[in-house]
Image 1 (cartoon, helix red, strand yellow):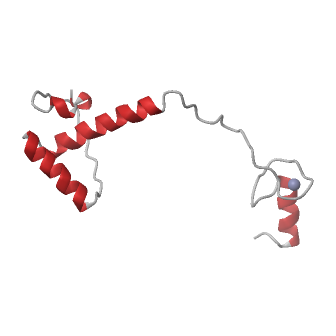
Image 2 (cartoon, helix red, strand yellow):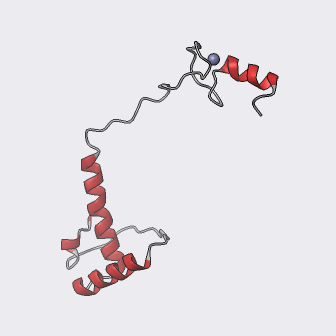
Image 3 (cartoon, rainbow, N blue to C red):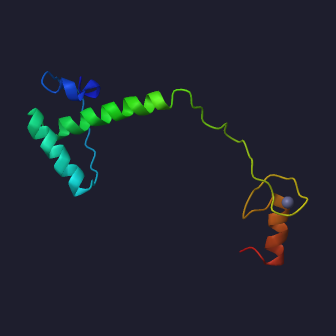
Length: 107
Ligand SMILES: [Zn+2]
């Protein structure tokens, strides 16, 4: 299966579903991919897919112990000294943002 493709597998391969993904890459990267493809007797697409798979494996492994911050966790608070309410907009809590808007200091 193509999604499991690795650089070392480029000689024995089979394909399933594919999707077009158009991306711009620097010319030197394209040249390097072309050289690797020629050296391995593979297509540039195969080399790119193999490298992406290895990169994704590395990223997955690197992120294994990472957990995203909980949604709705607010660490930023209102910019007005002494105000402990959570930030809502333009550096202020809801009350101070509305006050600043009425006073015309916030657009
Ligand atoms: Zn406030």
